Image 1: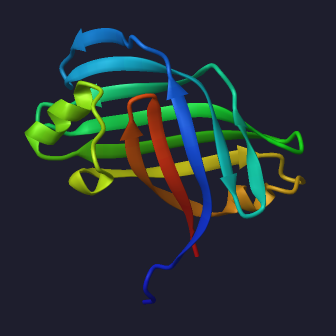
Image 2: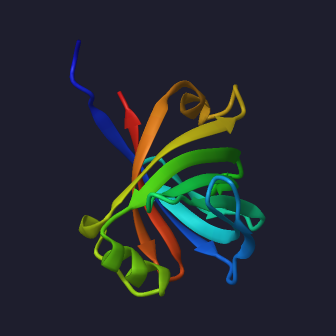
Length: 154
């Protein structure tokens, strides 16, 4: 079996509305919903903006792990729409996560922040290759919203 190799696709910066909608403590953990209000993405061969209206169904689990479930719409600079979904995990030492929750900057090396994005776009369009690959990303949580570096698994 071969080693996993990746190819950089894009950096994505999202903006998130505050405050979050707090569902509260459920049987799974503390559930919150964040509205994705926009953003940008850019990489070799792809560039554009993120539409307002996406969301992140966040679950802060009892074991200290934040579980992400995001859906959003991207629009490339040449007018193509791409539906993106991703699930992911973010966690770290309690004192670091407390700083993050307080809106303070945290060095990405201090936390584990990974997602698994999936893309859906026109089957006959220039970005159809995104429909046929597995992707992973590393995350950095800025006060205004997350920043992701997205890679295609080769």
